[in-house]
Image 1 (tube, rainbow, N blue to C red):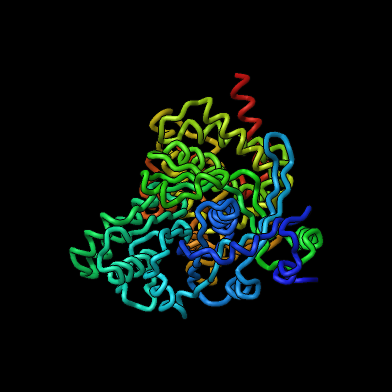
Image 2 (tube, rainbow, N blue to C red):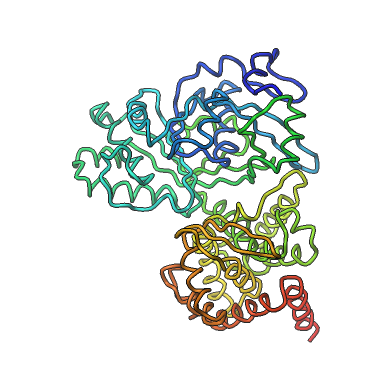
Length: 511
């Protein structure tokens, strides 16, 4: 089968019934963006949107990507001249959407490990205007380190090194600051990143002039990204897509039709991020809290409280779970009965219900295979960020146990039963099949499961303030319910537990 780049050479004109190809002029655009991360979310949302704007003659800039390590998909980028195909699949206003776009927004991929000097050289480019990142929820953390290392260990350390190199190259010119747009899914991601970078600057004694420039010349934007991007599909679907396209693409990325990139920013931010005027789904507003809370608590929060139950029930994908009557009922009610009332932000109920129903339609997207094990990566950190604030606010509002959340939490604890191969990797087993757990707390839970009874484990885990930022055993009745559901899951399995769960709900309503 042809390669993507060979097909590009043959593609005249640059559009066809199957694929939208980039025009040659796009390859000559200046490099305006430095991006930390090569993951599918970045490729399927920000990079895709910049490509869309470039095709319309707006923004007109390409992306230099920094990869934290050598190997992996970096070699695929090199083989494919940094091109990749986004296959958009979904339903928009009741109409099916099928679109294949070869994205040309990425110009280079640099290894932080072996090409850090090239990264710092690009920091001094007069064309550079924007920094984008997605280093997962655990990437925006303070690591006390020397930012003159080649490279620094943490993402904030790398970013600070880039900004300091730029400050020196342009001798503190206030017009040479950058717009920094993190897409990590944590509340106030831009503000938190800025605070860490400033703290690191002080610890590295970079001087008051630089710190003044850092604060005054650069914009750290709070953002929210919302698009389900499963990435490369399972082998059979992947082969079918390649046959449809007529070429091999090792970076092929499947994404749903829906997209949102909400950015909190000023008029200067709007001016620099001019792609917002042309790319579908980009909004820049002074306050994006409503967008963030709805997405974080309802879509992502539902994912995090459902993956344990769904995987233990034998479901591989989100769509498959929505085809199971009891799991679909659990996911629907978890979102709208427990999570929506617990959102720690004033949300109009009709707005929340409408958003929730839209999310459920997206979960049912017949074109996507969004795998639960991918959703489960770093699930403990996600649980703390996405669900604990909702749980606490639910208690403040209702002073009662949110039963769907308690059952989801119990299934999460059972999912985390594992034997570790490292501090952040373990092996679990469900329905006689092994699965890999990628979670920084895998070792912690392996130890708990090895030495405690399920009831003792529940208490110990919920009591752990370091995990959740709170002692969850202090929530009346929550630990008892989680322990009860965990014991039932262990004794009876997911189908019987769900059947009994809904029978009790029906009996309570009838009484």
